[in-house]
Image (cartoon, rainbow, N blue to C red; front, side, top):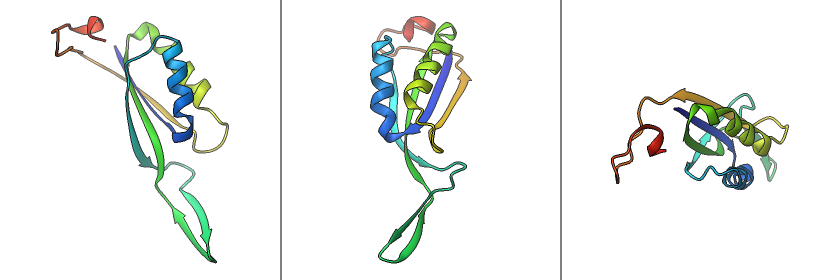
Length: 112
């Protein structure tokens, strides 16, 4: 099993969520986060004063998937989150040793 963490633009979240649901991927955790990467924030000007917003609001999506589904899900996220501009986000993939559904006690792939 694998954990996918995708940090994407807030405005792209509905596109990603809809595409994942259409493909049959219903389970996900979503949170609002702030961060920055290479873009180093956004430079703004207000009433003649310049300032920098260095932590940009993003949406973090976390999914636990079977390894055989990994590539398909990553492709869906990339296709629906990409704008082509700096700040589109990142996807992180890591191993998951165990998943347990608390309600039923199911373990492993059955618990996903």
